[in-house]
Amino acid sequence: MKHFLTDLYRSKAGLVGAVLIMVIVLVSLLAPVLDLPDPTRGDLRARLVGPTWTGLFTPGAHPLGTDEVGRDILSRLINGSRITLLVATTAVVLGGIVGTILGILAGYKGGLVDRILMRLVDIQLAVPLMLLALLVVAALGPSLRNVVLVLALTSWIRYARIIRAQVLSLREREFVQSAHAIGASTLRIMFLHILPNVLTPALVVGTLELARVIIMDSALSFLGLGVQPPTPSWGRMLADGRVYISSAWWAVTFPGLAIVLTVLSVNLFGDWLRDYFDPKTRSAK
Amino acid sequence: MIGFFLRRLGESMLAIWGVVTIVFFVTRVLGDPAALLLPIGASAADIEALRDQLGLNQPLMVQYFHFVTSALQGDFGTSFQHGRDAMDVVLERLPATATLALTAIALGLVIGAVAGSVAALKRGSAVELLVMAVALLGQATPVFWLGIMLILCFAVNLGWLPTGGYGTIWHLILPAVTLAVFVSASIARLLRSSMLDILQEDYIRTAKAKGLLRSTVFFWHVARNALIPVVTMTAILTGELLGGSVVTETVFAWPGIGRLIIQAIEAKDFPIIQAGITLIAAIFVLINFLVDLLYGVLDPRIRKAR
Image (cartoon, rainbow over all chains, first blue to last red; front, top):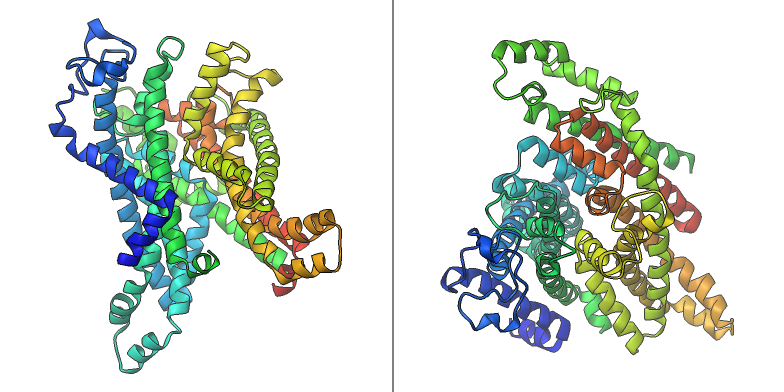
């Protein structure tokens, strides 16, 4: 743990990513106590008010401006971050659990199970993930639960492939062989001996997946297939603000910046995490 | 080589069959087209009559068999909105989508290859830092937002280019550049790291030691080997571009398959949705098949190993 933190501290990019993630998560968790204006309540006398940089310190002002029905953009961004983080994290964890279990199963059992699962992965990879997500959301109807399910569905294959490859080499290691020799059951070996050894790669995949899922989630809500209004979401804010692009640049600029900042910090941290756990790149440094 | 070719061909056919199956089950089982087609408040008898007419009352397996056999012949039924064969409507939009995707891939490959090679060869310089920072930023930017920002800058504020639409080369510039940024960011990062790996290889040192020209070493020894992962990445990116076309085409009002699918989703026009997604997936499967064959040409080791 100590080495983990010192290495993180030494890598500038990883540190910046980690700090930014902490700030974003903290702000979204603290949203209820921050005394923000109601993100769903408009004020028709204050439609499309431009940003005022001093507004942060004046109560009732709109530091990042307002949208087409006079809702405070800063408040909508912060409240939207709660939804985005909730959806993305749940989807990535859900996809991670399914993908890890199936990856271990395919890698350890081998044979028919492995062939069927990997063929399934190939078939799913043949459909571009965005289209698969669109298809399922269109059929199920857009809702918080369905968006999470769809994003998890696009995510499990990445875990399954990488975990399977890890398990294939773990299977031949002595500690697994000896557990097998003293008569441990398959389930016991898979969960007690193999699972702890694939949690690290699963974590690395998960972090990098988080960035991809955040973008895909905002793309879905940009197309009107994400979490439904009045719940604020970044993608929806972009779609709504786009109509007023010639008169109110702020309505479409800030939600995008929020997405870029979040994805960038997750990517920075994820890249560092991957290098940290990958002995090959580590020794090269 | 022939065995490999046939096996990959079989796998590709299997993948297309799988796609058709996914499309069938997702659209047919999760949503009831008859209930969606009729206006709200239609009587149960009306719904039942339409179900009969559409063949929805037959056993699921019969419906599935019927769907797969006609889908493989390109028959997805008649579009509810257009009143014409769904696949015909989709195919009419293919040139627009293909033009955009190919221009973006070509542009992105050139920019990404130059940026990635420069970053690898000038390791530790300010140029490398700049290239990598821009690439990281490019990967973190959602394509649709970048598109909107470019419209804001070059169409709304400067008025140099049209905000959207189709027809002239001027309409192509903004959407193609938007997608090219996304492509080149991935290519530049990948090419840099694969080149750095190869520059450490013994055969590069040998090539330099025997006094070959720097350009010979670069093109014959470094670039050729570093390009193999780039080919894989290009195939993956093409898939993402085709899938992502739903978003880009919406932003730029580009009349391609992606925008057609989105409009079909809004109108619950299932034949169009099914035909569009199947066509894109089939193109993607075809690209992956061709890429696998290309490996054999690029890298003789793969050809022999298989």
